[in-house]
Length: 463
Ligand code: ADP
Image (cartoon, rainbow, N blue to C red; front, side, top):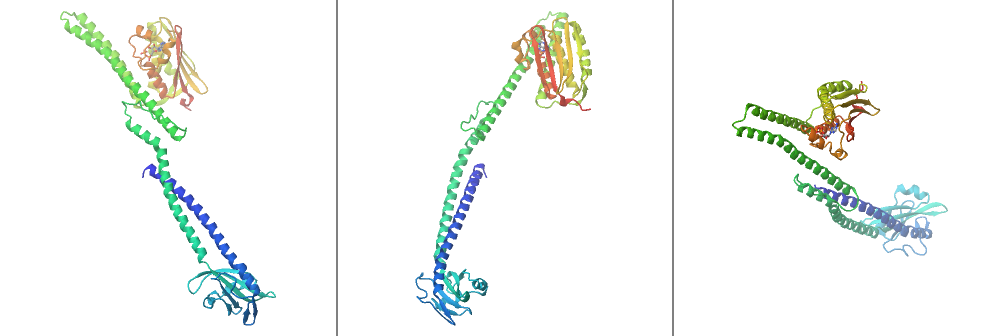
């Protein structure tokens, strides 16, 4: 059963329930009023007749007439205390109105008793038993009855009218429900059609729902913003793919060009050939660096990168990193320093080492000769901060927003250090993110930079 049908049925069902309740209430109110009216026709006249009845022994009389001045179909019967019929307007039906012994206590107390009975010919009647009292003593009972038929007929007419009205209202509610459900589900239908039309090649379309700011508007807006994010991700992927291909093609073109040159030269000396081979090896090395970095990012993007979490003493790790970087630093006469107390941290040792090595390498490479690179470790209330600070070239402000973009390389970096891949900071940020952290940068062109990795305290082992 589709949603529109379900909504329609729900709406029609609820409307029907409401109509049925209102109809039942109306019927009940009308019926009680009708029966009350019938009793009011019966009792006052019976009481006035009873006032005129005189009983002496087995005889009864009603001066002024018996059975007159009332409705035509009325039956009046006077019973003696022994149950004998003393007076009756209809002899045939009179016996059926005999009061049962169960009524005696109420009649003895002088109360009027009302009862529904069926006569011999099947007529349903309403009977009022009125005690005939003389000097406070019960001398007989007047039974006065009128048929219930006309009241029953008007009640059954009312019931039929209400049933028909309910049936019509049910159909109307179903039609209105169907139309309402259509208008409510219109945006949902549009969303479905749009979702069917959207493919990775065409992510331009949006629902752009107009109208009241309701739940459907919010759903459509969420859907649109999801498409925005999807489009951004797909565009970034395409760009990444194009840039990766470009970065890999450059060394390949260089290798191919140099090999062709060497092959075309029959007089090439051994030194020249060795030179070509060396160049091919250097370019292959550059390519494998790019491929390794790409592989790392691809694995991380697809969550295929497995993390082995253990307790890592960060100070010891920094000392290790400094030791590994010492030869590179010595080439440029750069002093490596470590500051800060040890902080144990829960993370992947290999990944953390790679992150710190990348940060340290950058600090040394993008640095003039002589100077310092300082590794700092700070434990704060809510976080752990690892800073790698240098007094190197610094970063021009216009390059700031692009630093963590894959394949981005600074102008100066490209000129002076051509072997970089432009993937280092992207990898650093990814490793920090995998540990729940972020990377902050402060830099002043010409004065130095400070990269700070901030981890939340939750990553610190409790023991
Ligand atoms: P790569 O080092 O291969 O160029 P990265 O992603 O590690 O790639 O760095 C991107 C760019 O950020 C570098 O090309 C450089 O311009 C700039 N950069 C990174 N670290 C520093 C630093 N410590 N000092 C100055 N510039 C830096």
